[in-house]
Length: 263
Image (cartoon, rainbow, N blue to C red; front, side):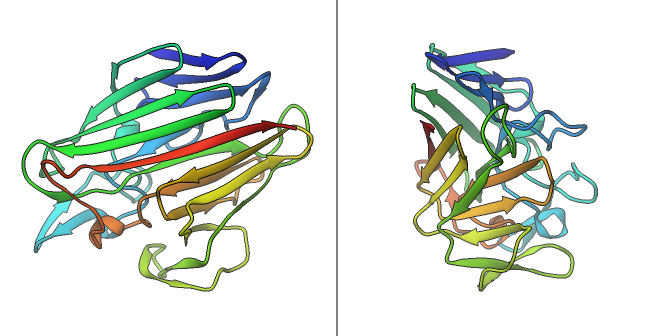
């Protein structure tokens, strides 16, 4: 189902069948999200849950037991399961909507994942809650927007995050649970961002200032026409170095506010 939420000329188009992702983000007449690609991982703006990024050996290891997950892109189990599955629409209004999902049978503890999109004239807010009905298990969450480098007006995008260090990757492209000094772009890397803040600016068009309650961002800026700034609750494979254990009465929650300024 295609859903639109809007405040004036500020609009999000959301597809509940495609994981509850935003497929288009209009600020006045400017559409700023990258187009749909030839794989569900490419384009739009989607939630990554119940894990974000690549996981080592395509499995979650918890308390000595291995829980293999389905390979969904090339040789990897990447970015969770939500983006590949239809969600249930809840509490829809003109300016907000919730999309609910459940983990699949590969996740040993049944969890509900509820994402909420909200919009005003000047900002978009995305929120998510991961909760368990019974049992405990790690979880991580994040958002993966694809942005156009060049809009219909203005200059090419510039962007930044308040990072203090960069996570180390091994020879197999998996993120390790340790950091180093920040390297030189282009990146397909995770960063430690204690403030949870960043920005995007298309000079002479728009600026977006983002603030969040998470402390990890992934930057993917290798393509020439699009780039990604991905706020997450932990770096890729963090689910195997548990920061967050979801259990009854102890959900995992996160939110990001994307504040828009017309230039």
